[in-house]
Amino acid sequence: MSWKVTLPCTRTEAEALKGDIVAFAALDFPPALMTSEPDPAQPDAWRLDAYFEAEPSPADIATLRALVPSAGRAKAAVERLPDEDWLTLSQAGLEPIRAGRFFVHTPAHRDEVPAGAIAFEIDAGRAFGTGQHETTTGCLVALDRLKREGAVFANVADIGTGTGLLAFAAMRLWPAARAIASDIDPVAIEVAAENAAINRVPIGRGPGRLALAVAAGLDHRALAARAPYDLIVANILAGPLIDLAPAFAAALAPGGRLILAGLLESQKARVLAACRRRGFDPSFEIMRGDWPTLVLRRRARR
Ligand SMILES: C[S@@+](CC[C@H](N)C(=O)[O-])C[C@H]1O[C@@H](n2cnc3c(N)ncnc32)[C@H](O)[C@@H]1O
Image (cartoon, rainbow, N blue to C red; front, top):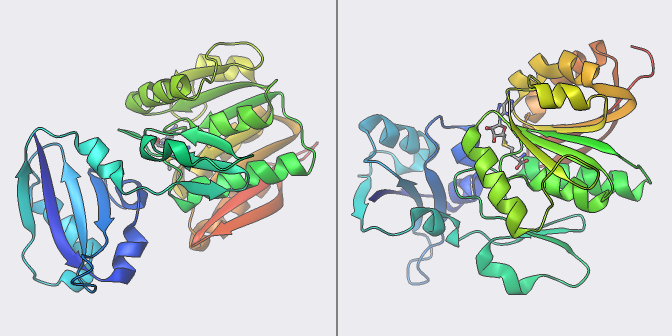
């Protein structure tokens, strides 16, 4: 059984909430959230729809209400849905994303892959990373730029992999690399494995293969055993990224690259300072909305 909560909102609010951004960035309870375009007959009637697996509590509704201040005291419509696939519902509105050479789409847009694109079909289901969020597209564009600049990576880690998308992208760009994708959330690793199968990403240990691990940060035997890496990607949040800076420095080879996302522009200086202290120099930055993606290089000497 699933539940749907609907609140009115403005177009600006709806656009800010589109996709999976909210489920990850603002809420501890990740309902599937989507904003709905208005009925053509009522072009100003935008609304926020949030799908829950269990009956939403008054606190859940209050949290949603805070996301759309224009709703004011408008009554939230709470609807109990028949046994539909609420995850499919939540993804139905996701348009494909282009980021660099990448094209990321849900099963509904399988037939729209442009010629020459590096395409991934991502069934986000219970994990973050449909490609809709600026932090994910920022990382995809950063990977694409590194490839265009001639970087070659043979040993890659994607920390906080969610759906697995960034690890898959790195493996398409550097097919001979061995890669490991980890997440603190075991469900994300299940989803990443499912997406690997959908996208024919070989799972395993050797070159050209992807290993998966449930781990907090780099704290896992498999992650330690594979170090030093020449590329680490981590789209998490500013706080954990700062905490992980020493571990990133220890796990990266001199000259190795670090791609960081999940921080807001206002948090960038703190993240950069933590990385500089640990022996990283900034290489370049990709800005998407309020979300910078930082690309850094580990100095030969710290
Ligand atoms: C913003 S999502 C990024 C997903 C995907 N990499 C992308 O770019 O779309 C962050 C992911 O990091 C995971 N995560 C959060 N803290 C973590 C930590 N300390 N170690 C490993 N994974 C973590 C979350 O479970 C979540 O799947």
